[in-house]
Amino acid sequence: MDTARAAALFKALGDENRVRIMQLLQEGEKCACKLLEEFHFSQPTLSHHMKILVEAELVHARKVGKWMYYHISPDCIGEVLFFIMSLTP
Image 1 (cartoon, rainbow, N blue to C red):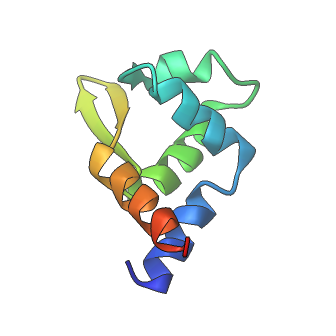
Image 2 (cartoon, helix red, strand yellow; image 1 turned 180 degrees about the vertical axis):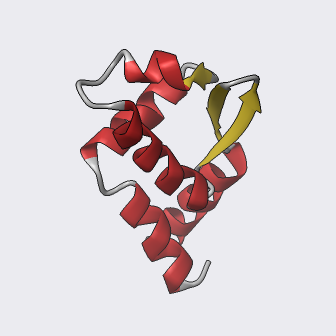
């Protein structure tokens, strides 16, 4: 993984709300409406956080009707783990 990719991933994870979103998605795919119930911010704010996670490829999104569903990208998580492990001697 190049340094720009690593920086983008860690920047996406560098926000407490986005880390909490990742923890919630660890339980499985969730609708944006269910994620929003766990926070004290607006739907546009959730959309902003989700856009960052999706653009970093940490999360995948799919639209069903008017609802967005999100789930963790196992490939990307593996990429992050591999990078972290490569930092150890």
